[in-house]
Length: 288
Image (cartoon, rainbow, N blue to C red; front, side):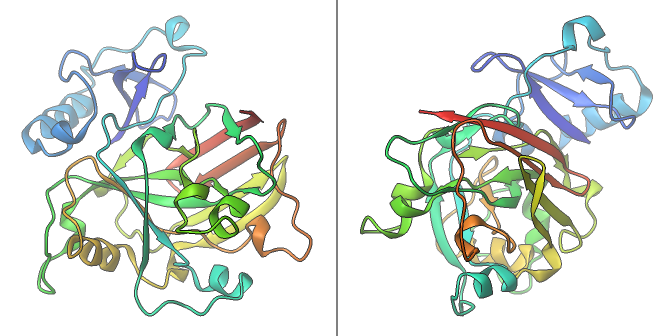
């Protein structure tokens, strides 16, 4: 299933995108929202799946749906755990040694915006950069997962994430990476949450990103140093993952910071990011 939330910020309503890729179905008769509580409720998810298969979900009026904002596909996210330097080619382009263990940092949930929302270049920014990433959305509480457990069984689904980063804030201003990762609007998510059954192999997905129409990133999750399953297991041993939490699993080569003469993002730039089967984002950047 492709689950999404539509409407103005703070007033989104739950919907489903039909297999035809164009028809929106109204879920308000079955659920209040798409959040951790729903993602942990297999009974209700099965009801949605059955109703979608039977074609009985109400179609959202085309005139009403036309031009409607698509918000983040998950509401009330508890935390966003990010993995740094998780692609071999990205580590190489930045001159970093591939890490022996996953490098983890956090982004605040209030960085999340919709896939087509405006992204703000922070005041004083000189190095705002792009990073297309596979986002993993948790569907079951995961803590201390053992080697004999399947971490993917704890995944509700997947989405496109854009881990926008301000490199000067991140690397040149002292302390941890947090200052360069948590600026307002720095985590567009969606457009949809695609349930796990639709993505049989998360290590076989192509990621692409363009800036002003120019290809910048073109990679595959097969190049991840730490695959999705290993990342979920690893994170669960340091912090409890709750339904609705998100893991951004790293970015492939092609970021501005990896170029000999980088040209960073500024107001007026347009970034498009997509992952096979998970949809496409498009953001216009503006000054904060």
